[in-house]
Length: 318
Image (cartoon, rainbow, N blue to C red; front, side):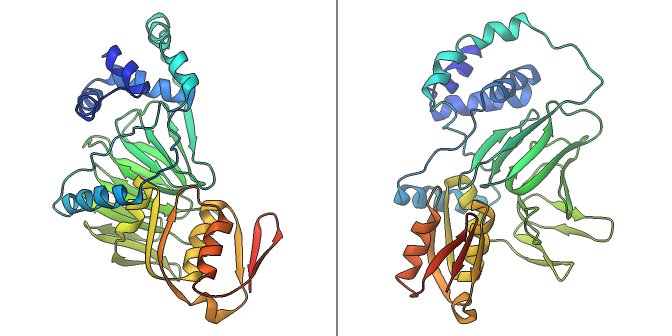
C-alpha cells in the first residue's frame, strides 16, 4: 500500500487504482491515518483551477443522473500532488511513520482546514469522510475521532460524503444549527458573516436541529432559515456541482442573490443602489478563481451599470 500512497501523492494513480486505495482506507484505520497525516503535514488538499467547461458539463450530467438513482459520489481528489516540492518530500514520509509512533493522549487534538478566498478545497477526514469546502470556508475537526460521536465545526459551506458508522453519528456544528447523520451526502451552508443557513440532502437522511427547532430531511429536500424559522424546500444541484467542479451555474437568479453568494466566497460586501437592478434576473456561470471585476464586467454587458470600490472589501453598484 505504501507504493499506492506514494504514487497517489505523485499524481500517478489510475482511476481504478484510486478506487482500490480509497476502499482499503475505509477498512484499514492505520492506512487512513497515514494518508491524513500526510495531508496535515503538507496541506496537499487545496484545489487548483478548473478548465474545460464542456468536459465538466458532460461529467456532471452523468454524475447527477446516477445520483438521482441513489448512486454514491465517486469523484476522488486528483489535485493533491500538483505541487512539485511535495513530490520531492513525500518519498521520505513512509520511513518517518514507521520510526515514530504517537503515544496515546487523553487530550483531543484538533486540525483546522481552510479554503482560501475564491478557491475550493477537498479534505479526507480520518474516518474516511470526504469534504469539499467552498471558498472562504473552514472546518475544525479532531485529528482522530473518539467517543460516541464524530463532531466537527463548520464556518462556511461544505459538501459532505460521510463514511457510514451506525455506532458513531457524524455531527456538523455551526453557529446556527447542527446537522446529524450516520452516513449520507449533503451540503451545509452556514457562513458566520451571513445570517442565512441552508442544508441540502442528496442521499440518506439528516436531522437539522438546535435547542429550539428540529427537522428531518429526505433526499432531494433542503432546510432554509427564513424569519428565524426552518422552512422545508427543494435542493439545488448547482450548489453540489460547484463544490465538486468549481463551476457555479445559476438560472434566473437575481443580481442581489449572485452578489450575496460572491460576498461569502470573496469576503466582500456589495451594495446595490438601484432596487430594480438588484431584482434583475440572470442566467450564467461563475468559475472558480474568477476575479470579482471579471464577473461584474460580464454582468454589465446584460444590465448596464457602474461600480466602484469604496473600501478594500466593499463594492458599490449603481
